[in-house]
Image (cartoon, rainbow over all chains, first blue to last red; front, side, top):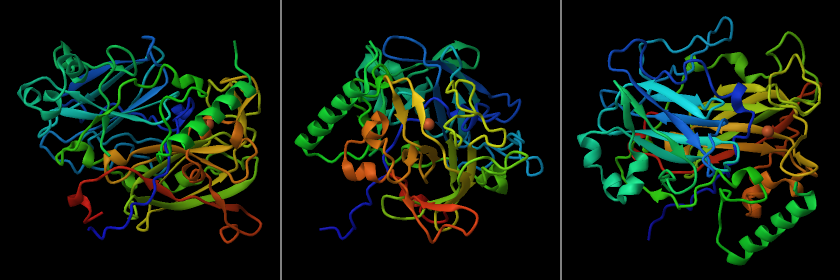
Length: 191
Length: 250
Ligand SMILES: [Fe+3]
């Protein structure tokens, strides 16, 4: 028998609601790649509800390893200006591994980042009005590493397809999040 | 047809009875909770796929530091050029993981309505006054004990369009990061004894009585400061695993 104490019960989740817009998004939130980096990859898409309608009040967060495989991240995603209290923005050099983007009125989002090393995916956390508890998913970048990924391999082909980004142009990939319906995105549970 | 409060209350009661009948503890709200009408088209129908990979990227998470916040970000009463209207208060507590360990140096974000129940958001059409001295957004980093602390004013209740005569109990929205992305949490803090609790499908979506009680702050007179602010204490426990190797050095 283990002597580990019983886990402390968690604080329940609640919806992000409709009015996070002036509190959570920040300038440069979608710009994870250092300014002007030649390897920058644009990942973009829509968030759709169960009726196929775009979701204009969703918030996506991205977490990923650096291009060197580093998973410790770095501060400086939000950087405040200590003099004015305004946003100084990212320093244009540091790769923090973290991004945040709200969908626009058409339910559209886009982030610019560098391809991660050591894992073929970007981790995504989805928040929205109407969603009582956030959802985790992954944007898999097509390539040999995705072809041998155990999670992707465990899914039937039509489900697997919901996690794979598709090329729409040079260094540009599309990934839609479907909260519900026949093409519903695969969401993940880590507990 | 727009449902009435009676319709919604009946649904809340039925789902609460159902939860009791099944008898299985559930800490978080079900994503499919019909009394909260906006959830209807926004919850997945399929169960999430369990990931037990010790190499999962989600077992690590973003970090924030002194560059990401300023000292004033934790005082929501000093963002404007004058004092906001309302009941000034201190809200503080500790952020722990499920093993009871403090979450250190992590980002806490809050947002809330003003004392009249109005958000400084263009889409908030509630005809209550805006307060030029209050935007209602704040940030801080937790200290070495996992403690966060905000100075703010008590938000008002506000109406919404879920059903006829729907009112949200007063609440502060909280966004929290743990030592892993799996521990990410967005939630809401409520105030003790609010008469609107029973009517609110968002709070009642947490069908477990003790879990729901954990969303309610405690009034703390020892935290109250003379001639200045009332004190509320609210501790937060983040769910989800983290990489064990990251325990040291945080
Ligand atoms: Fe609210």
